[in-house]
Image (cartoon, rainbow, N blue to C red; front, side, top):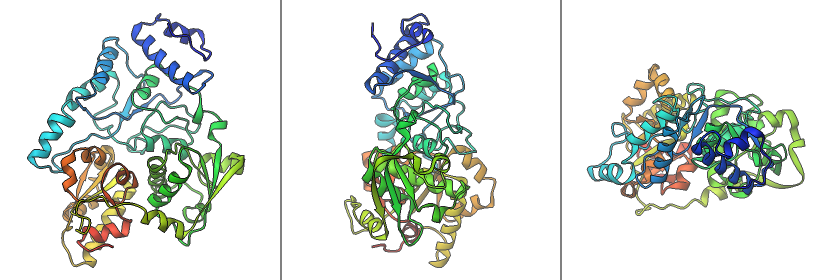
Length: 431
C-alpha cells in the first residue's frame, strides 16, 4: 500500500485505504502520488465542481483510457456537477474530407469516438453541446469565480481561468482532470498557492500600437516558458475593464503564451483580477524584466517557419478560431470577411475558410443576420478542434493558413496576422 508524503484527513485516508471501494482507492492514490511528486502538503477541495476534460477524441490506441472509464462506470462513480470537454475532432458537413482522409480519420485516428462519448455521458458529461476548448464562454456556462479551485486540463482553458477569472488550477494532464473532479480533491501546489501565483517576470510593453494578441502571447511564452509574467503597459490599449472584446483578446493572447511556452497564469496590470487588487505586490523581489517593442514583435513574427512542401504557393485552406471564437469575434470576423471581399471585388472567398466556435456559441450566432452573411461568402462554421483535424497526415497536402499561434505551433499551418489572413483568403499574395 502506498505511503503518502502529504498529510491526509480521515476521509481521504479512508478512500486511499479502500473503504469507499477499490476504484476510488486507485483514483486517490494517483492524485496523492501526483501531489507528492510536486511536494504538495495536502489535498484541497475542488470548489468549482464542474470539470473540464482535455481528452475529447476517440483514438483507438487509448485503450487504457477506455478501460479506466469502464471501471469508473462499473463503480457507479460520476462527477457531481458534470463536466465539459475539449472539441470533437470531426465535422464532415462543414470540414469536408476526401474519401482517403475519411478512412484515416474513421479507422485509424478517431474510430472509438462514438463509444468514448457514450462513456463520457455515463460519468457526467453535461450535454452534447459541451465540446469546446473555451468552456468559460457565457453561452457555455462553465464559469468559475475568482478564488475557486478547479480540476481542469486544456492549456488555454486553464490559462484563461487562472488569469482572466482569477480561479486556481494547475496545468493538469488528461485523466488527472477527471480524477480530481470525481473525488472533489486536488493536490495543493503551484498555481493553487499564493506563492506559486507570484510573477517572476515583469514584461514591459512599449509598442506604438495595440500588439497582435497571438504574437505578443508567443513572444512572452517563448521568453518566460512556465513562469508567471506580470505585464505592464498593455492596459494602455485594452483599458481597465474585462469587456467581451478584451476577454477575446486575452483568450487568444493567453493561448499563445500557453502553447508557445507553458504559461498557466499571467497578470495584466490594472486589468486582470489579482493585478487590480494586489498590483506590483505580485512580483517576487528578484524578478526579471523583458521589454517588448515593435522590433521585438517583428523579430518573433519573422522567426516562424513555413513548413509547407510548396512554400512559394498560396494557401488554399484557412482555419480561424483556435481557441474557439467568441460570439463577439464571430461577428467581427464576419464583417471583416464581407468587407475584404467587397474591397477585392469578390463574391466568395478564394481559399476554403473555416471558422471554429463552441456549439452553444454557434447556436446563438445562427440567430443573427451575420450567420447568413458569413455563409454567403463561402466560409464555413464548425465546432471541431482544428488541431485534431491536422493530426491526419494526409491533411499536410493542404496549405493551411491560420491566425492562431497555437495551431501554428502544433501543426504545419502557416501563421498570418489577421489583416494578412483576410487578404490571403481573398487570393492575394502575402509576403
